[in-house]
Image (cartoon, rainbow, N blue to C red; front, side, top):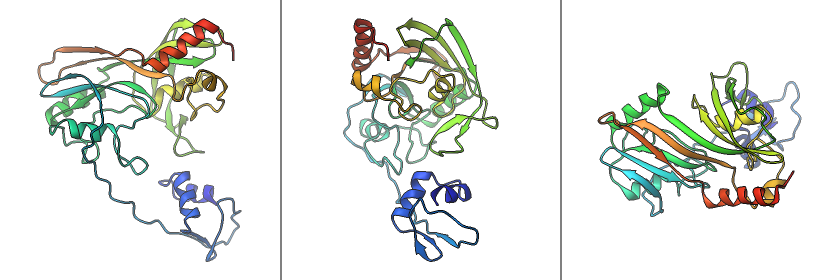
Length: 294
């Protein structure tokens, strides 16, 4: 039943449909059914979609690591485990809530839930982010991202040994047909290009430097999974957890370590670096000391 509804109402995620069913908002022939109910020809299916609660971003006293700030921009180091802006699943305790507490000056272009947000990092990805403090800065930075002139470098630990020293993944990415919350490589997807360079090889793992040329949702994670080298700790694009449990890793090993762009006011070249968080350093140390093979 849930799959049938997802196919007919693609704007709803499968988890949202399952929640509607469990809350009694879906009827088959005027009767409530489970998500596993088999739909038959001639069934009358009614789906009631209650309005979502109105979200509002409020200032919250959350500590954030600001690396640089002036009248136009903020460069911060985002920790893993926190989302960038409020959403139905994460209405508070986001980077935006922390920014609103830190300053009254944020661009309005992103709307009330995304003030100042020019680009995003996934919840379990750590590292560098740029924030715009006014609309002119936001427009300028957005253009730089659009023109692919912003250089973003990530560090990732992946499963498997990558034998070539460097490479490029050029494969279109779009919304997964099976799970609307996931992205995947599909023929009708948008152009997506990722470059990588090997930094160190372990028994069955590789530490790489990654540069996404385009900026699709989950791009690095999807591309690395696509070539059979998924990011360690990425439970969304890789099921097995044995090595993550051993390393006591409660996040995926992906860190935005370097960010180069031009200052939106005067065009000055700006470059920032962010070291690996301690939990990722500890994981590397364990691999080096034990030389584990999973």
